Image (cartoon, rainbow, N blue to C red; front, side, top):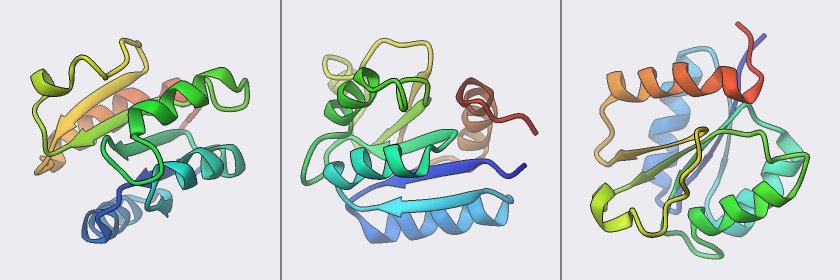
Length: 127
């Protein structure tokens, strides 16, 4: 089974980099570029994991999280929030949930791999 990962960021360079990196690791990756698309694609794609920027057009990643939590089809999906801003600055808007994590840009790939390995089983991925 290949893990399904949804990547959301309004910066195409970031989505391309993450898609290429995750695809090279054997994952099936879908990409969207705004918060509205993120909410729609999550329902349609049913990923094992979502990687999302916080600040995007359409809706912030943290706002989309609230929408996803209200839908039984998407409430189980773990989310890794990614931002250029520090955790301390974003802490007031980040959800406190055992299936969410935060990583600051520029992304450390070893740290990203460790977080993904931790979150994928929460999203139903069984290697």
